Image 1 (cartoon, rainbow, N blue to C red):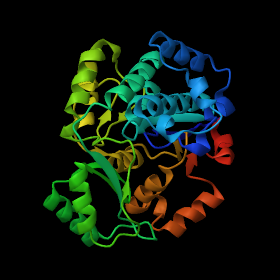
Image 2: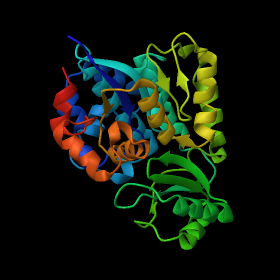
Image 3: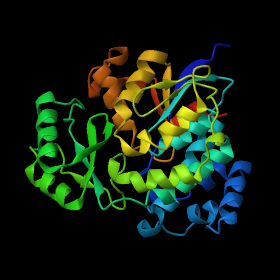
Image 4: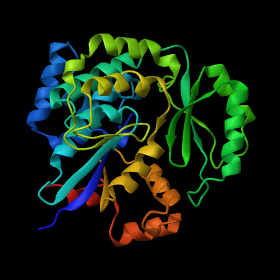
Length: 338
């Protein structure tokens, strides 16, 4: 039987919210890997993921905190990855968004499962060490999920006026970062957008030089000898592909705890490269949540992949035979799991 070719996408922060509470119990209860992750956290005196996931109520003050959200999201995504039926699906490349890069490292085999979790867990703590500042999401895409280049230029001009930096390029959205006062000034100076800017609660100025403290902590704490050559191609936050026989593990470590933390993360480029370089039969977005689905769809539309050039085209294709499979959606999940 010919296997379908898939690119796997690993989600980042902001994907474990109230609807996702209990995700690990629902989909991965009794998992040996989940027990290993809880054991690793117990060594550090941290609460078990099973307890956090099994809480009676979602607590934004707890569950959205970096040192809790990062390991929860990583565990959900990595265990979803292991649930993919690889007898039917050939994983031709792996990528991720922002914190999802750490999960992508483990999925691609560039680090072990234990080390991947340790990295995500540690970076959840390290990400809280930064200069003052935060992030905001700007929706540039209109109702048709396409972006007006003139609007994009006007937004970048306003950012330049107030010293606000690009953080994540996310399809038809742009995540920006900077000091709180700079973000306030930008929001007052923006051209009309489809939606009001959304300030991300609890997030620092990720993917900017303001995260130097976090990068320094990662380099001191997370050793280069944890890294190896990926077993499948790995697409980073610049759109660069790390291939098995071309990768220097030391350079991968350096990118992970340098550029990846301190420079903008171009998820748009990563997905565009995934489509053009690997021509997958489907794209599989790991859980929890499905907030990246719109961004992936917008890249598909902008690229005119499979002649999909509008929101209506994409919606019609999804209704017939989903090209984008979100494992956070129960019906779509069933398509790819063992």
